[in-house]
Image (cartoon, rainbow, N blue to C red):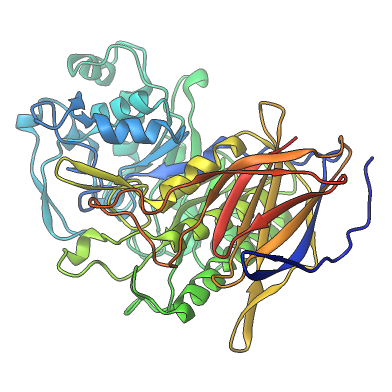
Length: 512
């Protein structure tokens, strides 16, 4: 075991003084595995998130494979997207799956009442969604319709997707072009039942959930994991009631939390051109995720001490005022360095709670809220959030390791403060020890010394750094590489490994 005392050093680099922070990683005490689905994605029928952003149809001049854009799919594959949630969101509780099967030219046209009041031609349905997942190599999370649907409708959909028999529904699937059943990994009963999914009480929902799942039958080997629609923000009532009252056919309880700079839904704050006070409030508000998860875990631990049921944060991310001149129901917002820092902070929080948090789904994949990718007709640009996700790929399926911080400075605004440095460590599936560090302070750089006990003395750190000159730096179609990772390396000196963190930065790498 390697132990040593870290001495505070006053160093001056590039004209700025660095305060030194100490990180100690205990490689001899492995924790829970970080489920790869913590890096899940979310694709809702909302704005151009699917139509145009990912789906252009087989006849489009934009290069595609069976209707899905080659450029977008190629970029997403680089993230090793483990899971995609579909079709919603609020849209799920008005979606009837039979509208999205059969010849696309004959599918009914509906109105998307939740998002912009636009026409929904159902061009993307069950077959198209599974094609998307297969192209990505991702698991699927299908959200059932409890709000305007029924147990029968969901039961028939599950049979359509999973049955290998010669039932009428299985034969209908074959008629529509799919012989063998798909692998349905997760199935949720409704969405946000407390709000757009039906304005229910948790007790009413729990009763409906139990009734519905009693009829969701598959062959044993084809059974998906079932998800109950849980609460949001500071409310633990839903997690408490659902984990207490539902004892069968439940593998996860969902939880939603969006980071809003102002904390007010009416005027959320701008995605770019914001003052430092809103950088700070965004960081402060996103860090509330940790306390919310802890509170939900506490009630679930009481009702489910064996931790059989996961807490699935299946909607999270930043939510700003929409871009000027766009449809307010399309939720299009720019994506800046601030979003990448928010993403990294949340990843570190999710890793800390890997014992319960076994899936999360950022909202959303393309052109909606905190997106990985923005498109405009045939153009595509990767966002800073995309780069954060790619930097954290080594944490998918990694084994978490305890990491403690000492001498961590505070980033302050007025009378409020947040920790300057956030850290996460894990042993990757490749055997390497990975460390992620975030500097929340937009003005001050810092240095982090890294100690590892239970392993060899670290000799070097190699990875990537993501930062920019401005807090709202972002990529555009004209300047697609304004914010992108750069290579980063640090060599130990005198048995001491020091990682230098620029202001407002994310660093992820391997300690060797």
